[in-house]
Length: 306
View 1 (tube, rainbow, N blue to C red):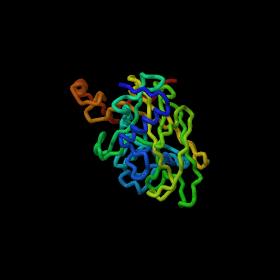
View 2: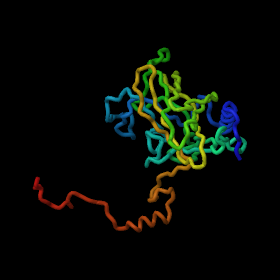
View 3: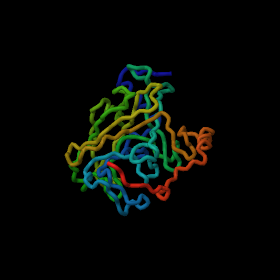
View 4: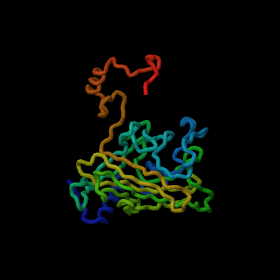
């Protein structure tokens, strides 16, 4: 069944009610959701993730003031397999979309009843995987980076000194299988933002007591109007600093799918299941070798005629 929404205000109200019913955190306090992080210095990494507070490597020291986005890093209990992107370790889609329902009915797009509303609200942890009740709900909004050795952190002095940076997001586009108005983000106060390409949204800076620093902590849900053929979709965003302290980020593509395939050992055909199909591939290639060493190179004449 589909519940057709006749107007945008009603549509947003239904979405907000549904979020409350799902138990989605719409306030701050103890945050149990996974945010996309925004920081600086995108090519800096700890020398060893097992001891992130010691040593570092930086493939491009000239980008220290450039903004960037990233998912949950390797040291997090809910680390994203394909960090810094929201991806599987093999580059496949990681974020799962679920259809939004109100009283058991789907919510249809007002001007296209073939499309219904989807959002992203699954639980995940590194130890327990998808559906782990001890994991974090993915994904919701934005948080400034507070990374190892402070290398990704936005500038902050003290509670009485507001930093010069003023970060805002800009929507660059959506995947080609979507109409421009098939994506929006919904704030905790029931305001829709980033509804169209080139739209911007300012991220309020605030003093974060838990970090003892100025930063960003903004809740916002990701929503898509999808038809039955839209299995994988994406939105492209960029981060900017209206204060002029930091350089624009590279475009960041966030991919979502109704069904994801996790890489598992033995799944040779990448269909998400280890079965007879994988065994057949193994049998067909049994005995083949991909090993080649320099000692196998035959000597040959290096003289060449012009």
